[in-house]
Length: 200
Length: 175
Image 1 (cartoon, chains in turn blue, green):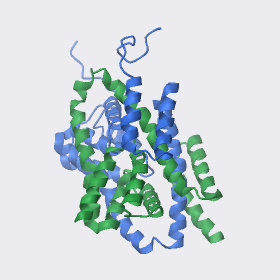
Image 2 (cartoon, chains in turn green, red):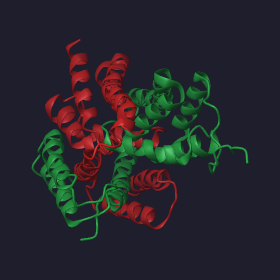
Image 3 (cartoon, chains in turn purple, cyan):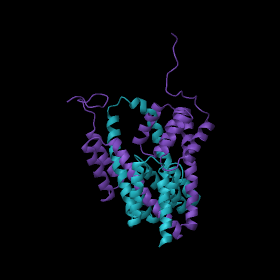
Image 4 (cartoon, chains in turn blue, yellow):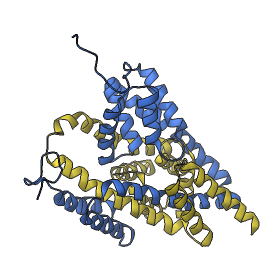
């Protein structure tokens, strides 16, 4: 029997030209409303353009989330690098950020003109209140994925209390509690190599 | 010129704190731009954050607004480069190292440890924003309403957030 082509769920298209890459990320950067940019990236990269398979997407996502930087920008850099090397990474990040950055620069000038209008203030203040609800949802969802034992909840509470109530700089919390949490989850010989707990 | 250098320094520093999302750096963003450098007031910062919710792409593109308010177009440009370039280069480098790091046992520990702390940082960011944004019964009701709606349904988060703004305008006219 002759060798079959790789049986992926969705065939991956050949890497796009730099211009197509820019255009793709620009469109995703310009249409992703509501904060869930990652969902738009997945739809675009995996389903629509078929530049990445789902497995690669999830892998790049894991790198994006554990590094500093915005998730969407990190994803653009990693995907762009996979597709077209370093020029691809730069072009993808540019396309992703350009629409929002242009609009927000323009917004600053508009705010300078009409920002003290009481209707604008009522509108923007209420949106900030709604955003608090949205961030709470994001925290709950992140937490459901990341927190697996009681110690994790202690680290979360410690971080939040130190930063929000004792005004400890984020950097110290990141390094202090971060080091503690990494040490807590340190590699242990009694754990199976895949990270799952071995039978006690 | 001094101002552009300060902007670059502050936003390069803040970008390194955005582990788990832009909100993780919000407490530091408020501290540095409002309390230390007096570039914006806290209400202005919140309003830019709100506008960022309405703009497409990453929400934290609102940092461009702060740069523009402080130093015009050059300010916006400097802030964007400072905010995106250092972490961008880091991500690029780690992305290429990643396959070699795959067998490193501490990789999973770092991912889990930092993942946990990032949840705490996003929570802290939410608390700092809530202190400024939740100023009365109506704003508290809006936050609770958006939370409940998004937990129970799978609608686009932009919809209830924009609806909050419209309710805010409605409430203004009722008073």
